[in-house]
Image: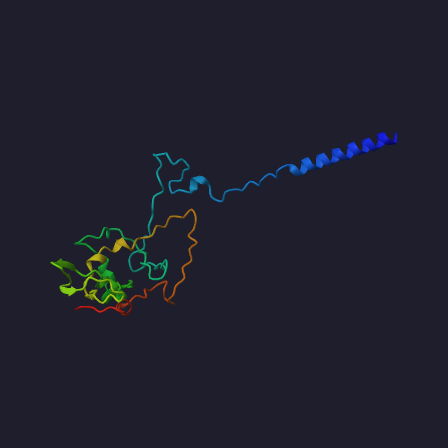
Amino acid sequence: MKILTKVTIGLATATLLLVGCNETAKPQEKAQVKPIIDESQLGYRGTADLLKEDVVPPVVEYHSAAPGTSKKFKRAYQDAPPMIPHDTTGMLPVTENNNQCVQCHMPEIAASMGATPIPVSHFTNFRPSTKVIGDKILKDGKVVENSSSETLSDVSIKTTHDKLYAGRFNCTQCHAPQATNTLVDQNRFKPVFVDSEGASKSTWDESKWMKNIDTSK
């Protein structure tokens, strides 16, 4: 009888141990993570079907404030090209014979127009005319050695101060109007400005790029 009781107790104990092992061996179910943004909102087209061709994206609306009345945008980073905060209807595209930007942004009139003045860098040619005649290299008509000196002593930089350099004439190659559409996900980039006025003013002037540079006039 005692032996039977011991066997019974042993079987019961083994059963409990097996049940316990099975319970602990079961993998835990992963919690379902609810997406913050729906998949169809990830693209500007507003659909998760990337092969759908008849999707009409939302109309892009731009700031409609007249020039001189709009609030200037903070720069995206130190010395970033400022974005256009006002209406550009009828002003674009910039062409050889039609650049309405200069009517307000030339340095001599910008202050009176409430506009950002065009910086001196836009009146400067950083790409001197280079020619090779025989075995001689000429930059702006001056013979220079074929070298890449760290001091850039052979580079010719010329500033006119009154005439835009051709490479800067097309303003919208760097400056662009900003849309008013709501973003799916907001921009979380936070710039660090090295200058106290970096969010609204460029730090570049002639003293910086002329440093260690001998120019030929």
